[in-house]
Image (cartoon, rainbow, N blue to C red; front, side):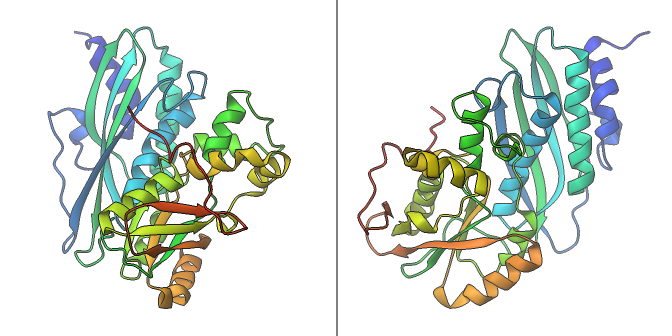
Length: 322
């Protein structure tokens, strides 16, 4: 007897991705063992076609981005990946070649990040395609990074560069010229989860989260959790050479860099005396970090100051899901 279409699809594309505990995707749930002395960390993110990725994005990058944005949530908690559950609600008529590419991308990142699929679900819809992934990780009990914890006087830091993802989306839409190396489009399609950095700064940083909805908006989340405000120096925000070239040609793109989202860098705070320890930890993780401002007493408002010290007027703090 042949397999029903759904189970044949799972066997063809997703069973090769299954890891230990997935029971070959033949049962209703996975069974996993936690490493001794570790706590379980769970997060979930969804991606909708036309909202979180472009319909003509390569399927290999869509699978990898789905996994990476969830890995970024683990990084923000100082956790290491364990495995993931995935639900694919596919538009009817999705080509088998698309699914094959999607699975190839996942397989590549599974190898790179050391995890595997544990289970999930597959369904069909008139459209658009909706993809959801639940990530599982582990962390030492005394090494959990939280959004809560920033204090007035703490420095504000970010990893990597800011604005590439938002600018890359505009490049792919044809709204901005492409950089010669394709860096911006690649950063939109393939964010870099800062797993090693998150684990390295645990015990040093006072609060942390990843930048998904825009630097200013996400820093506002840290401020509300702390009951404090923040001041950011716009010229201190690190940008890539490709982003810098666009800003040099059009300074009005600065709000896009500050509020556009899709960076998936780590945003964290730490006492001012910990700068040396943070730089050493970041070097060990192989990631650059930059101090961009400080936490201040007062209402949970983020002020971004220009070169003259005046607060910039930003129409929006970042991306809204509704």
